[in-house]
Image (tube, rainbow, N blue to C red):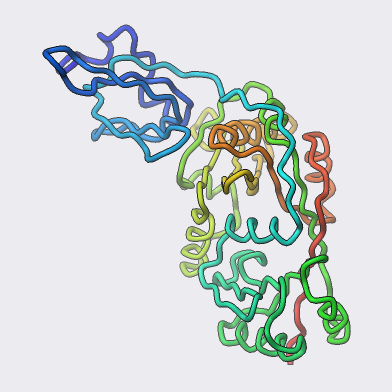
Length: 335
């Protein structure tokens, strides 16, 4: 029995609150049966340790919470040994829809098979119409509806054009309107290989983006509506994880975000502080996230990168990412 015994007097307890964010193995007291104590083991990410006790997120199922006085043994453990498995087959249309779930807009409305998305202007992805399939109207009329919908929200009207996927006549109509196209690459890689790519680094995982993470992300600030939208989008998705490498003063040196959705894990928001670049931290962050994604059953990773971002593309090349397809953002001219 451990009740009343200080943690430092339990020799098998080799973790403490400073290990929050690490993958751990813990054993806890789980009641008494026939006069004998019962124990239960769990391996997962230690996502919390406060006055209420510990929280551990296993590979599947709900988080496990228990009082610190029930902790019998605990230690940090290596990342999940992800298998080298090819990514699952997926069409551009399906991958775009998966990506939309991993970066969900605050406001969404169908237009036939298209989806209008708005998030107070936080990123084009969350403030554009996903033009997949049939809008249920002639394309010119559909684009007028799109323009009006975004104008009502004081937002520019962006159209996400995917080939194959968007109506064939859409590109011609956008060209007639003089809408400029900005290409974005969708790149995929085997998750098992990515999980093995990083050098050792103290990467911590969390379910929420803390103030330090957001400070390094540098995409929000100042506008309460924009900050609220960013928080909703960043934390939206089936299984969202945030990673950071703590610096000497506690401020993150590198960050990243991942969303696990079935067999796919989406990577994004990978940033490294200027003073910490060229140390392999971006790779370490992605590798640690990939390990967690594999632990939850994903086998493929994907990301979206603007076609003119040569530095990021070079990094992703080294990590084994290849281009699945390209989509474009087109901004409709104002009337």
